[in-house]
Figure 1 (cartoon, rainbow, N blue to C red):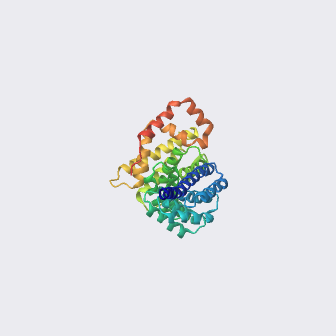
Figure 2 (figure 1 turned 120 degrees about the vertical axis):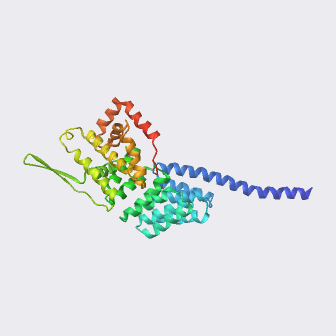
Figure 3 (figure 1 turned 120 degrees about the horizontal axis):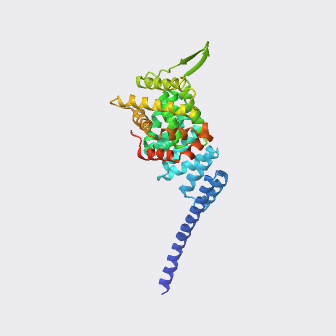
Length: 349
């Protein structure tokens, strides 16, 4: 009996530490959830304190290391985030790609581009479907004004998530940097369709206006209107033809029968012309590139639909907010047309 009693006591002593460890792990996870809520509210300092508290309870918590690295990055404390992100990578598991990606962002913010690219590539190697790494790689290339490389990574990001609005913005910046006006216009339009009212909307709307009208200048003299068109040359026949379409659409808005239209109607007419020209040019090609499949076909469908008016009003809320909101209130069915078109139309690539 004494031997049996001793065995039972020994067994209980072994189970108790394991039970305590499980309880501490559960407590740590609850604290991490609190930290995530604080992070989402933008209170990064308080979130970091919660993650540190969780690490005291569970020093092996990869999730706590990952989240503290993320909050430090967002708080502008990227260098402090490095050891936490490296701990996630050393531990292995499915958070490695995210940790590599954040390390890339740390080095990118420090303008250590070679190190940033190295980390982004490791993120892609760890998880080839980790969309954020392609996007961040593209952003890094834009910062270096390497627009062709940026476009390539924007394409990869969009193939993985066609509704990632910031990847459309990235593609637009990359296209504009290569003087591909039509590419920039359609990408900016796609961003504004997904984010008609956000902190980035005004920036993208202004870039759209530059892409639409940046190569047209008009001057009145001696009862005549002189219009000058400056066509950027890309060295690509299809891109140059599309650029001509953008210029012709801008010129059309300056003609006497259009110049007195309300500004938002001029914009609608201008965009519809560009969408139709881009779509028709794409349809003539047997071997279509990404832009022609993904953007030109998509917006060609929109230009031929009854949703064009609602689309223009939605993406131009920044420029004509009061008038456009009043129009939507007076025409509720128009927004439904746009929603129906959006649900039934997918990007092709």
